[in-house]
Amino acid sequence: MPAPETFLPLNPLEFRILLVLAGGPSHAYRIVKEIEARATGEIIYPANLYRRIRDLLERGLIEESGSSDAEEGGRRRTMLRASELGRRVGKAEARRLEALVMDARGVRLLGRA
Image (cartoon, rainbow, N blue to C red; front, side):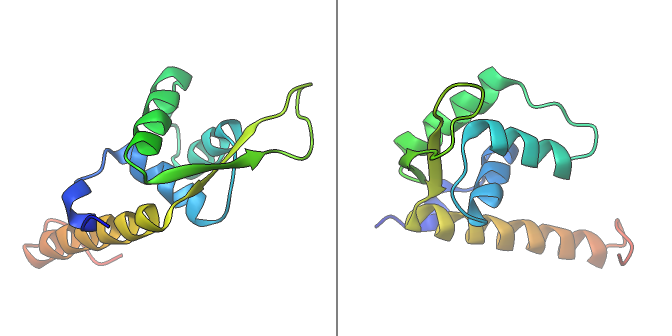
C-alpha cells in the first residue's frame, strides 16, 4: 500500500469528500449537501464534484459500495465509501493542515480559537 503522504496535499474538495465519507457510505448528492452545510456560502458545482469523485476512485482513495436501498427521485444512487487508503490519506492531510495552523498561530498570524 502506498504511503499516504505521497497523495498530499489534497485538493480541498477531495479532502471534504473524504471528511464526509469518514462518517460512513454516502452518495454524491448527499456528499454535496453535507459539504454545503459545513462550508458556509460555498457552492459545489456538480461537474467539479463528479470529476473529484472520479479522481478519488481512480487513485483508490474511495470505492463504490453498492447502490442505495431507497430510491430517491425515482432512481438508485451509487454509494461511495472511503477505502482504507483513503482513511489513512485523510488522516495524514488533517495532520498536515493542523501543523500549518499551528505554525500560523506560532507567528501570531492566527489567534487562539
